[in-house]
Image 1 (cartoon, rainbow, N blue to C red):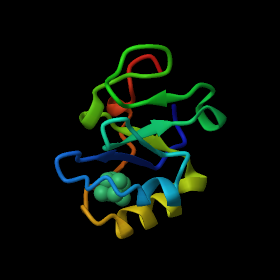
Image 2: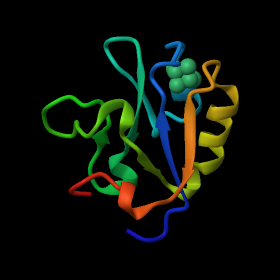
Image 3: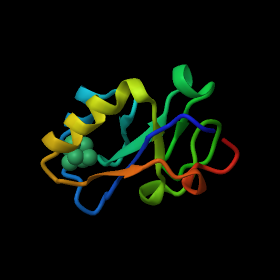
Length: 105
Ligand code: SF4
């Protein structure tokens, strides 16, 4: 669990659905069928992929718009760039907090 510095989530009330975040950091952001974007923890960094879309089923899960994903150190710059470029200003970056790690991870 240790070793992460940053976490990220999206305030979906402000998301414009343009997908810029996923263009910059496709291993952290993912478009949903309803036109909103969510965060995720990708298998290549975390062993299995968990999409924070509040949907049921394997690899989908917790808390939807309130879900906070860990950011691998190698993706920190991309996530910062995504937040800077996000037209909705809705990519929220936080320091790593173990208490916010998704249950079961
Ligand atoms: S860049 Fe921001 S506004 Fe655009 S899809 Fe991503 S989170 Fe939503």
